[in-house]
Image (cartoon, rainbow, N blue to C red; front, side, top):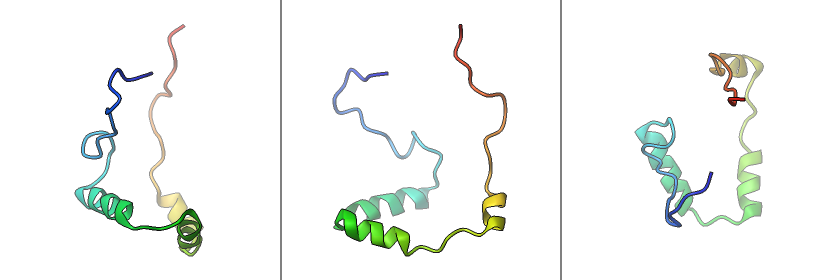
Length: 69
């Protein structure tokens, strides 16, 4: 799917299921001047999720999406 407008960007307030705090954090993260290497180091320094944490995460539910034939 393509947009007819070149300036049609993802609207964080309406396009994703996020909280207002998530939007603030995403905007702050965009302002931090990190090189790709620094960002990778930051992400690898984050603690890994435990098995229990992963099991508590919500999963996709409902009927799978299927294209009409």
